[in-house]
Image 1 (cartoon, rainbow, N blue to C red):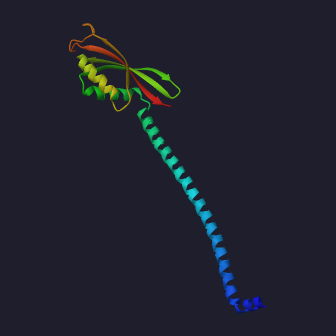
Image 2 (cartoon, helix red, strand yellow):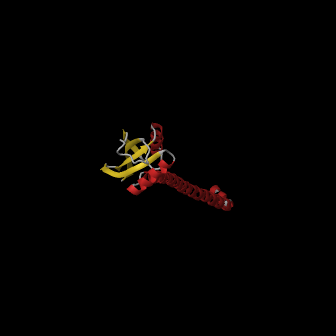
Length: 175
């Protein structure tokens, strides 16, 4: 009886306590669900950041590859003549002839050779010319140098004596 009296007197308080207890249980359940969703979102965010970093790295690599491809692009005889003319302007070098050479194919690149004959006044002028060829904005590699002195029968009356230099210059093209 005492319990019945106790329940009947405190019926509103017991109902309120039960409602509060139920609200706390529901709130804890919702809180746990939100924490799980937050953890999942955090994992997704970290994965997306990693993907973004990989994509940024790939973009940088592609830009670097494009730069190399522009550096190692295919040269035809006309562009080589133009480049050699530009280089010879600043030195005491006269270009006598330019001939295409052999093309060698490798798995990653193609190597084109050109044979150039120049006339120089001195070894110093030759050194300047070769230095400018090797340091030119386009890639040229001087592979072979042959030096000879022209005979008097090879020279015209108006030409100065000097050194005839045969150069083998190669360019590299990425495949």
